[in-house]
Amino acid sequence: MRPVVCGIDLGTTNSVIAFLRDGIPAAIPVDGEAAILPSVVSYEPGNGGCFVGTLARNRRAAFPEQTITSVKRLMGKETRLNAGEKSFSPEEVSATILKHLAERASAQLGQSVEKVVITVPAYFDDAQRRATIRAGELAGLEVLRIVNEPTAAALVYDHVPAEEEEDSPFVLVYDLGGGTFDVSVLEIKIGRASCRERV
Image (cartoon, rainbow, N blue to C red; front, side, top):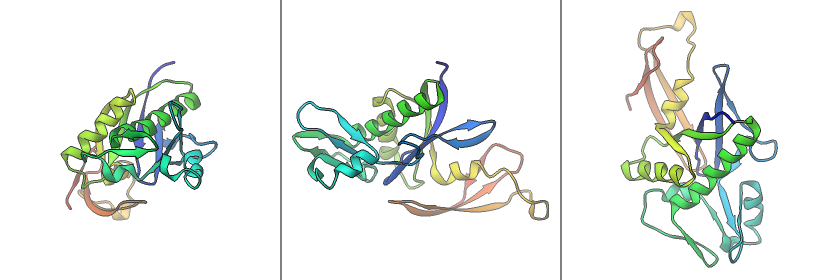
């Protein structure tokens, strides 16, 4: 299969993987028919495997001690997460989610997903960004770039009505997620593939 580059929103509550179809971002169904994957991993006892997404979320009620949620909050921290008798770093749990997304996307697209761009909150520090890259590497992916979530949203802002067009318009981007709510003001140069965060 020919490799394809995908973008991943590795979220606190839910995650999404997407690619460009004819220049337009399209989310890929990875959890049944749903494009949104709950960011939950539930591990089986012993040397068993694990469940990711809706199945893992559904197992949480019966097996809370073997299920890990909201791992994004711990990225970049020196901590261990226990799931039954097993212990994982936040990067390892995130890698399980990323690997699941890439494998399901590969199956849907009929193309191998090996290279990705991952979004992170604008407030993530260097340690949290490095941890996100490490999670991608543990998942067997090449992380081409880490992009701030508000910046990623603004990159698809490619049309301004003629009566509102300016040389340097400002765009207010809300990131209202399960674990994040932040606001960024971006200055976008129309006709250029770049944007700059102001706040």
